[in-house]
Length: 322
Length: 75
Image (cartoon, rainbow over all chains, first blue to last red; front, side):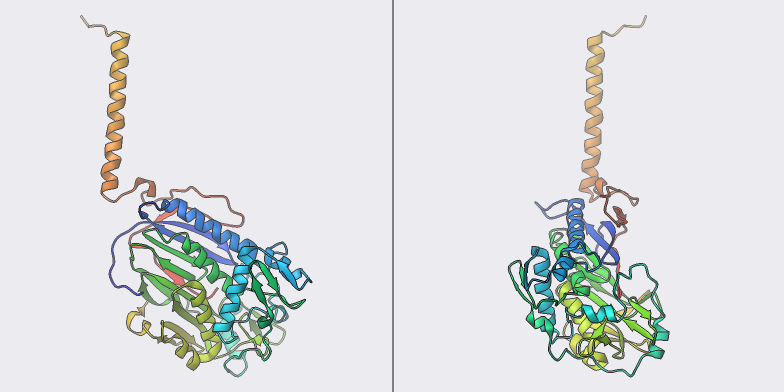
């Protein structure tokens, strides 16, 4: 819901380094009657985010996800959180027509993204765009391996050796869970590295800016009182290879980095997981397909030449950032 | 000639003064709360009750009104 009215409020803020990025929790009181205090609610949200990081990361061999990936047995009883996140990622794969694929871990490592890149300076996106191959939209894998994954309660079944990478899906999933702990507060925002869930009983509009990946700073901004917004792009997880450049958004049909003509996609949705799924799908779909995808709920694409193209409600509500 | 106060009288006066001070503080807090200002939220500076977290930079500050802006970006 995009709102135009404002009123004053104060907020508590927590900053965390999680998911290889910067995370913020903002909570404004007073809470609804019977709800926890803003500081207690923020502490609960922080604990939720930390649990998600601890269990869902692929970069820690001791995480629940890593233990699942290392287990050669066809079925494993895992944690409720991991099972829920994998089920959510399978749902994202289905809704995206297979473009958001949780089974590309091998290809991701082959592309050069084996370890965490937190704190690693990205390669120049401008240089990468000049060296990139011809643009074309990505496609689903011909034989999607994620269709072989089944989650029943806390049990995850998959073919032996098939490994799962939750990637950006985990951030949207985590932001939604943290936001659930804040729903009775007057205002709140959970910003999991750009996957943002906004809400609160006060329905107070909050300014949301979209960073521009080439020019730096904020590109456009709009007001949002409740809902989610997420951005997927090439600008941060991009690196040099022996033959050119690579990034972390892979074309499932080839297992190679996707160069679609879109360098960043931002999507609005009812929740963080859906926004993240829409944003990634829009980027992989290319300029035309991406805009169609974002038309219903709103969003923005940044094309290779730096132009920002707005979709849906954002065409009326967005303006250049101050 | 100065009148000397008994220990009992002094104690009584201290108790009364203490109660009056407590009432004044409580009244002030009530007035602030009624005005929409919760002192527990701080006054623009860090009101830190951080919980130690591995690999985190956690602080409990206060942002200006209206709600703090957020920026979505690829990460």
